[in-house]
Length: 148
Image (cartoon, rainbow, N blue to C red; front, side):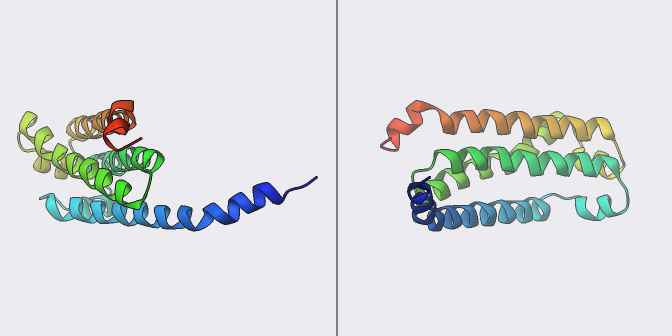
């Protein structure tokens, strides 16, 4: 069997793969750091102390940030496109905490106190919004605006 075509395709595409993966992981880590800095409760400290609500809430953040970023990565036609749409979706996700806090007053305090119901609500908002954002990025009409 001749494996030269798939090997050549791999070799040709690997540098782009590494660059886009690196950019996406960098954006993901940066958004997690921003989230940790912008939330009034210290989720990582609470998680280390065994607080299940903090763990649920932060798990929702991790998944909620990863889903739309993965969709951006899947649909981007280049690094700049990935960065633009990635930043937009990540900022919307970071703002979701503030909106969830409007519905449940004292959300940071409740999570710090171990209120699992509040954490599950926040996690659901984050993941639900992530799925909507991922779908919006994948919308064929968005591709028309990006020249796709």
